[in-house]
Image (tube, rainbow, N blue to C red):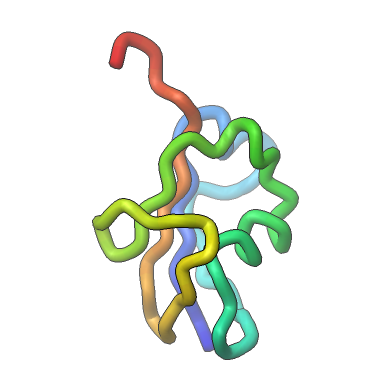
Length: 74
């Protein structure tokens, strides 16, 4: 299946801003973090299709997954 992955803030450094990613069926949010070697301690916000998501959430084909680091002042 294919999902759209968006990175924000410091998570973009040396990576990408937005990318289509191929995953196995029944993949979870945590699988994207592992696939792209994102530092888990820097992932503060996970969203799937503009809604807050847990790391164990199972993804569907064509989902949009966004990751953001902690944001100061919030």
